[in-house]
Image: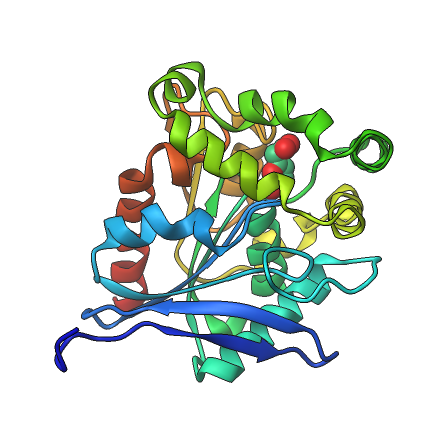
Length: 275
Ligand SMILES: O=C(O)CC1=CCC(=O)O1
């Protein structure tokens, strides 16, 4: 590697309650700073295609949330507020006072919780394939998923997850991406997975939305059955000035299905944050 080539920073940050979070900063030549939060049962590698598509336009901080990847996996219960505090502690560790904050699915819930607790640290907000609330039935539905994982193992969920995450055409054309997501999924520890499912069942960030005062872009696929367009519309309708993009034919994992589109949206947020 040449001396002039910016190097990646990788390491662990410790949270206020002593949990180690694994992170990586992908260098960028632009002035932007962007932190990306992954989906349930994924890890920082979920964002690699998006970071590559950003092509150095921004520094990108990616990390494994608690309970995920190679980060610490304390016993539950987990909460979105706790995951938001983790991100604040990670940003303190890397010396970032603020950033464009974006998340996909579970990551979007964490981004919302972070924006609610630390609004001054959010330059702009990206909400992809996500929701502020999974609905009245959410605690029971998520508990049922957790119970299935506990009783039958994560393997029992793989068929459901593949069609939940990726459109039929994408699965057929990109078996390697699908298999990579499946291996990441299967590497999760059951107790942490269960605690995270129950966290999502209890999540309700709706009250914070009207208070947000930064540029925000909401994006969802027409075929997203996990957080359908109606949920995205609630976000866009309640966050002042938020834009809503509905992508024809995309399913739930848009950062893996259409990384260039997600990078384009992040780019717009980076520019909006500078304005
Ligand atoms: O329902 C799913 O499996 C998709 C999903 C919900 C939250 C998340 O991060 O992924």
